[in-house]
Length: 501
Image 1: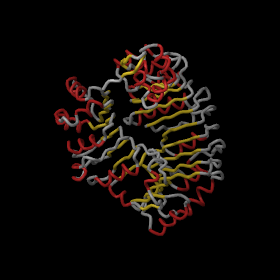
Image 2: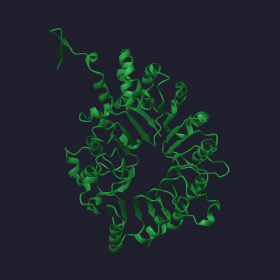
Image 3: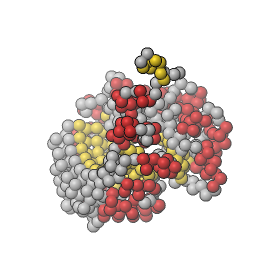
Image 4: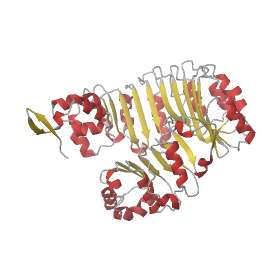
């Protein structure tokens, strides 16, 4: 289809130059900064000026080596204020004089480059570091030492720090008060580490912490110095792998009485705790509490009477399933674990669950069932959580016949599929999952599974467009030392950045 305009009574072709700036501004709101840069940079002076403000925050993390070589010289060193890039290319931070926000992704610890530049990283306002989940205890300890000595130090200028996919051991002999830090997202080994950390965050206003080994230490096991956190307004605590003891949790909440927003995403280890105890012994410590959001998994099944007490006591809609999981609505957390077919038989105090579907903060669903997943389950997930972006399978990835045969169900917002360690998964299962996600751009897959289905992927015409559009492929448990095999995988996903962990 061609478009024309009339100039001086003449019909002329419509060009990019003829479109108003307002139309491009509208279009740019739907594009990534890297795409804006790739498509419009260097066309002429008008477009260079038009895209300038969109290049203040730019994502280089998914560009290939060739693209980086081509595009980096065209970037205005003065205009870039925020940069997202792979750890492998961290030296590019020196190209931009006004840079104050840095996000590093795909950090593989034993060959990471960031420790060489930590003295520079600590001088920014904002730093986010996303590690790859492949760290052993030795490398974790090394990381903990570097981070504690440099990023938790009075000389550090960071106002906001995110550390993802790593659990730190906090050494009280290395950490010092962070005098500027106001927002922190971090993972630590246990509540002992958390207590040490809290002693060194005098101005913190927002704290999100994920505890690897739960919350279980008694008062005599932790430091006698437990400073009150007077500035903390939002406290987000997560621990789903190991149990949380309510008396140990009480020691933590007792240190932050002025919290206004509390987020609890925990497995509660007390077998006989009830709703009234949670309110009287925990929430009552927070004198300024305005919002309480929770996902609580109980080690013991909730009896009917106790469940009704939860429903009636909390002044907000609640969702319950499997007789031991409760969460508030709308769902306030980024991840929902151990989802299985039984979730469709939930109980709730909400009149209509779909009313909350656009309000959930959920980004990732982890499927943890041991039986084949049903079409009913996936339809429920689509309707209940339409904005979910990441779908992960823990062990088993079997799909029931009704789901395999269905051709209508799709997840338009889902862009990442994780198949880390699945057993007896067939090509039919993988194919249906790929067709389920038409906008897929990232796949994390187990090495043996990829080799098992590689030839079928190569021959499948229906999956060809999806393989072509993939931007990132992360292969678990497989270092490919055979060049020809790596070349075959790369040719199957020609636009993808392929990495092995």
